[in-house]
Length: 168
Image (cartoon, rainbow, N blue to C red; front, side, top):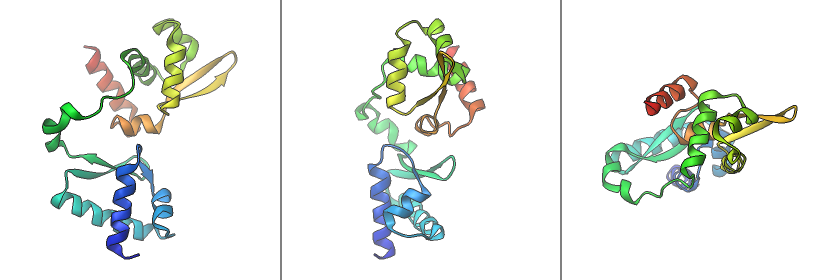
């Protein structure tokens, strides 16, 4: 494949994926072992996106990449963007986990009530939360996917600041 075809392949993969992709995944998709070649393709794609695309290439934490709608297009299309499949109660549960992490599931249940277990199950299915056993309970924390999805890129100070602003 030539460079243009490889750029198009990367663009298709980033567009089709529901999560950021790692350099390793991108190397596998393009079938190369060269990280510098992938970086060259990403630079080329970024340049193309800036010139004539409503999408922008975004590097999230730890060399993960995704395509996102550029901010200037949001007002024109935000009413047709699908809403997240997280209900309000699960989203509030996720906010508590993000704010207090690491948090014991039993402590979370005291804060949010007994239905928290079904919300945690849904959040784990979406890969926004991970749990580790601790005695008879579990310790919960958010994942890198959560950070990338919500644009926090694994910055806990930024997460806490945004959550405090939302609580006011």
